[in-house]
Length: 165
Image 1 (cartoon, helix red, strand yellow):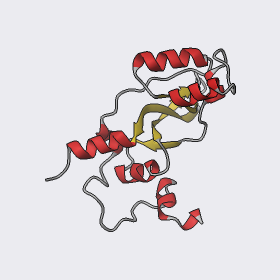
Image 2 (cartoon, one colour; image 1 turned 30 degrees about the vertical axis):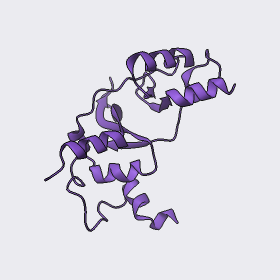
Image 3 (cartoon, helix red, strand yellow; image 1 turned 60 degrees about the horizontal axis):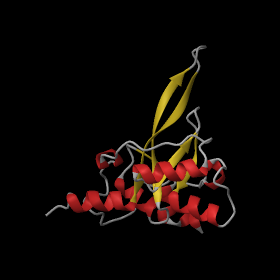
Image 4 (cartoon, one colour; image 1 turned 90 degrees about the horizontal axis):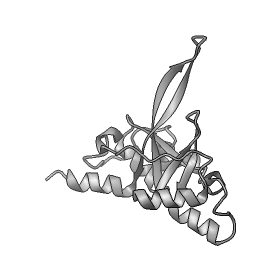
């Protein structure tokens, strides 16, 4: 059962540490990856436009975020092309028709060890930062801002560049 699986427990925030012989980078924070700001698409962007933007900017994927800041999912170049070519979506459809709405989020303060556990099953994780916002009545709420998208290649690049001799 996934409820007694250590990797599932770490990924979902129930355990902090389970590896006895952790690699040197295990406890380093995600913020040390120095991720570049992500390209973000609004939900009304068409599949055609999403493909053009991703190709032009050299990205494979981008978060789809509503103007309210709600993270709706991730759009990938390959999934968009596959969906359109298979007839499951039209070039004119909004990108929300082809997004992955199941994705993992990780915070800047989380460890690379936790990220590593997430990336064993997922191709990417959305790096989020929580921010308190206040409305005109003085009511506060937490809002998540997309800080970046991290892949296994980002983690591997960091580890190989900073490998302890």
